[in-house]
Image (tube, rainbow, N blue to C red):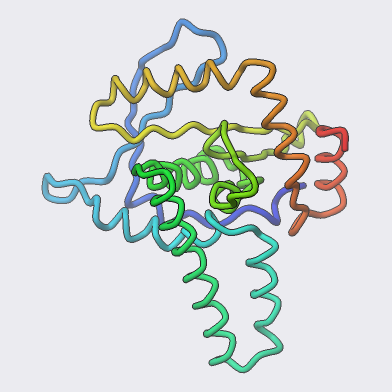
Length: 223
């Protein structure tokens, strides 16, 4: 698979995030509705366990693959204790970035974006393409638009799919859906799509990709 090197193992999410089976259909063509909820134990949701598990995935969500792979490459060259220090520093950097983004936006959206990242990588099998958390905390690079950018390669059609994710963490489900639909409608405007593609082109990261994956991305993005 072209993007297989970017896929991660999310098997541990299954016991924490369950899928709601439903027969709801949408009159809008091309819309697929997937509903998920925190698992229950003895009639109570296991939210705390879900938070703790999600936090373990913070580093690959917040940091670029290039940063992570640079530390991973040291595993065979450093003594175990030194390598442990490097990984701890990497995780600390991700946590600080997450907290910085939270303070900068003054909202709780980052937690929703982390869940969006996990669901998109796990359910859709589409690895994150750009670590927007890094861009959001860069004062020299104001970032707007989608909350997540993911990519999936379809070997049957030899086509590359880019996913723009929108996250809304509201206390009211209806309000969240309405807000998300409004944001999605805005993001589909030609100028917004151009902005997102330019963002991808400027921050493209080929780390972990084979020659076929890189060629497919270059063809799609025309860079």
